[in-house]
Image (cartoon, rainbow, N blue to C red; front, side, top):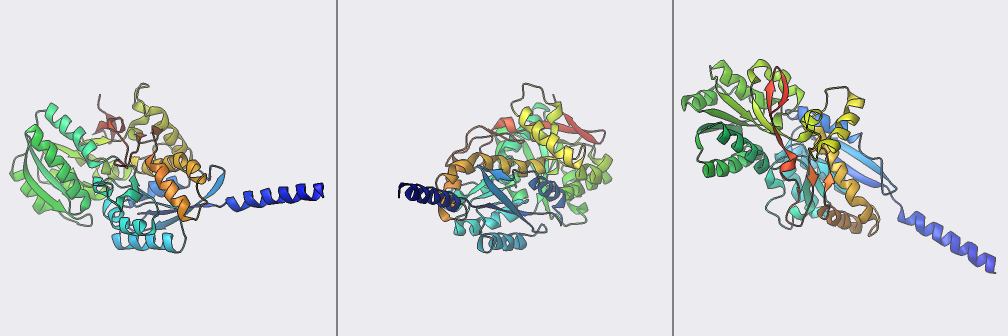
Length: 382
């Protein structure tokens, strides 16, 4: 009888252990095609480099392309939470798509980690956005770097042109606040769409105010269009861009028209040029070396790093969540949300993440450096 009881107890423990185990399903929405493809492709490449197990549990990644379309992004998010029953959503690539997906994940009470830049994705905090986190730097952090550089170079009058969507509007909102404080005049304010093929009219208006500098708030290869139009119309002044253009496709499309362009980027873009004292150099290099080992030297970009850092956040939060719920359950998703919110000093390729109930980005000024496009390549400003 004693032997029988012992065997039954052992079988019961084995059954309990098996029942507690389940795969972690991660849904990914990104823009692998369409105008934002130069951002989404390195993100897609990076997903295959993320951990295959976390906390001893297998991780499945289900990747869907939104084709740079907001409606498709929402449709994909609904499919992932309703049909695939994912535990967390990573995405999307662009700010408009990420903003549109918030209602879906909030309704499903499923955490989401956006790879888009707009601060509006996580601010102001409310009952819906408490389920949303993001990995790219906020507009305000990068705008601060640009304004500081402009002030140091005695730029007094700026002409602004940005996307006619949440990305451009978010940048203008943050940039204007800082420009007003610094006494920098915004003498022109224009918009264009990512799919536009000509911005000649806007370029002429920017040039007409005789600015000390032009600031273009776009992302990916479409952001090259205003800069090429400005050069074609004879503008020879300084041009600033956002970190949304920091990939090799932008350099290829913009060519010599982008020589001398100034922009803030995450440390990963210049990982090998950073001084050893930079607190992000080690974690940035870890991503760069892994990505380039698979896709070739010189192929890495900040956008893939945003996907990589989503993996860093999950690696930090999942083990604690597994102690409170089984993957595939509301308890696990809630615990994962809580765990993401409690992350402290997690070293990613983009920066060091420390979250809080009111800060679902968690990056600080360690997450950006200023660079210049010089001889067709990125060059770190000292």
